[in-house]
Image (tube, rainbow, N blue to C red):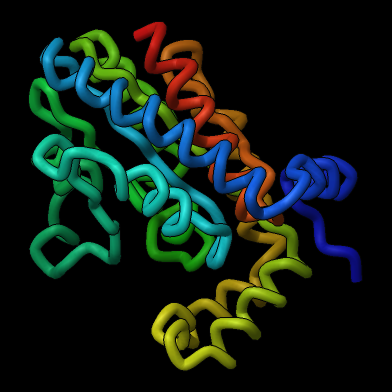
Length: 242
């Protein structure tokens, strides 16, 4: 059975061949990190606000990208939010309510490792939200992001796309490496069994919530090096115009 992805295999292969060597990747990454640090200082001194949203399948490399972003930044001016399932109190509230307190103050960057898009992804696929609720969420999310942008927040959204075969390879690597076994859970395998449902959900998410003020960038993620460099380049490019 052929499993679809958001990005064609040809484009994934092209992204894998964009570095001459590991040293070439490391040099490019280091240069970009320096520019990103400079951009952070501009945001801080200018009292601006930025949100970075990362979505993608399990083992798509979200954590690796976030690590390369944050490892050089001033820790006083950013916060990473790893979004999990809502607690018992949050379940009784509007699904967006728990995120409001995490939106950035002036001079700050808020980074979301998964986000409010869980309503139209995992909650949709796993049947944790009624169909009417997750369908209504597209317009609700667009309205809230438009409100943030109007309030001077730069909202950058990245969907990391990893292929079915590459995800399997990464799962096996995690299972065989004692230092990475904590990254793999039974839930990851259950999600993998619903690959087609998740791809459909990701596709519709991008179609319905990639707006003029807060567009999605879909990143080829079979190459971790390429994904990291691509995201940093885009943050810098769009941040400079902010």
